[in-house]
Image 1 (tube, rainbow, N blue to C red):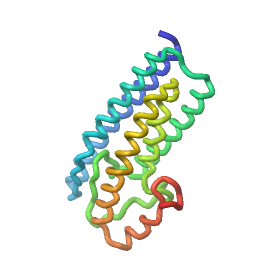
Image 2 (image 1 turned 135 degrees about the vertical axis):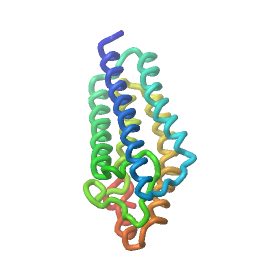
Image 3 (image 1 turned 45 degrees about the horizontal axis):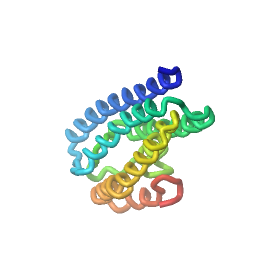
Length: 193
């Protein structure tokens, strides 16, 4: 096993451990929100999202093992920068949502969407972070197939199903004035809907 491959495996292991810890945090937050009277919107796509994220990490390792040789260092460095940006966005979203952060669609009735921190600028910083991570982590070791295949699957799931379901849940459970300001924010880019 080469040193670059070992380092890459450690990076994927770090992301795996991070995701497992986040699932525990999300479960704790879910229980708390439901105990406060929050409403969970059943999401048939949730299992597909879990499968996508789990197999993505495995695919990163399999393609890296199959490739055997990392890309030029500049490609890895650029991919690491984008991966880091994704991490920053996700951590900022988790911090700003606090105990309201979860992996499910759960809404506290008549409690407006979070408007502080990174949410002042965009509606879905967490999803933007995930988009960057899913594309960039495989590219750190030049795993182009994994990057393209999982990015496309993730974008289809997010844009066609998850984000519309989440936005609908928020709109249907809040007063018009709370949603009006929120609706002005861009999904992923400040100032763009």
